Length: 349
Picture 1: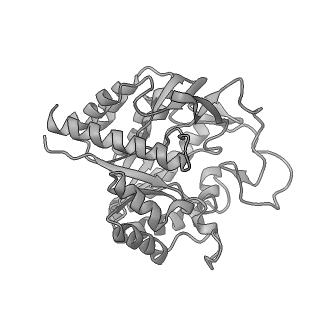
Picture 2: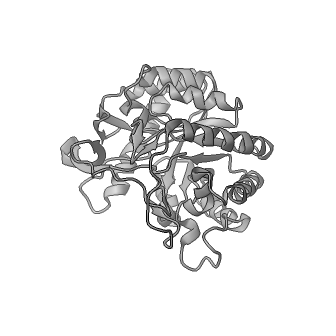
């Protein structure tokens, strides 16, 4: 089988620099996933935050990556200002949907092939940092007993971000899981045809932490088997999974992580992978070094390979190491391990 799994690195706006591009190449990455929330609010942009990222802005990012020998594989997550009323089904929904369509067309023109997103009102919430990884390294986790008190989401707030500081007092109240599935269905029915025309895959992240409700709001894909419901809403290659293997391993579902990899890669519906290891499951787990958790990562990588996955895998998180550059050291360790393991598997060892 002549597939070639690709190694990438995810970078936030403040990390999208020539130095970090060189670091990524030196550590063995060939692709970048740009996690862009906050990019539209950076000083000196000269455009309001609600203006979707422009062709020129994304083209400049791509040129910077290319200068260091990297490909621009994906954007991860829309700006809150670009789609809050899509999530809330609010009065600006239709205008914001047009902006998202414009963004997909721009990405298509630039050859950026994947748009990752998390269809959630609170995104990631309740995460704590613990020192339980090997050697006492610090890493994120979810420990129910240590999580902050769950309060309802204030008006003018989504994704734990204030988009309207002038919003009246009050909260969103309770929002059901089925309400969120219906909003997601409408989002996909409207956006997938544009994604198909643009050649850009939409890829949804699972619920992190994988709980059925959070702060009174229903969650989507909090069990591995729920991904099938997402994929069946709009059957298309361009409606895909941003397969966060760490989050999948944290879930308490009917499928285990290996069955989930097997099922969704066999269907060709994984756009790219967040590759990390964990110990424990919801409601108590923490992230570990890539070679030191509950998941047999070589077995997992073999399943991707045997089912023809040729997309990008990124170490979305890694425990920070005790040195002058904790994040870089942790990522370099993960990338080096990934490169060695993938080469071994592709050689047939």
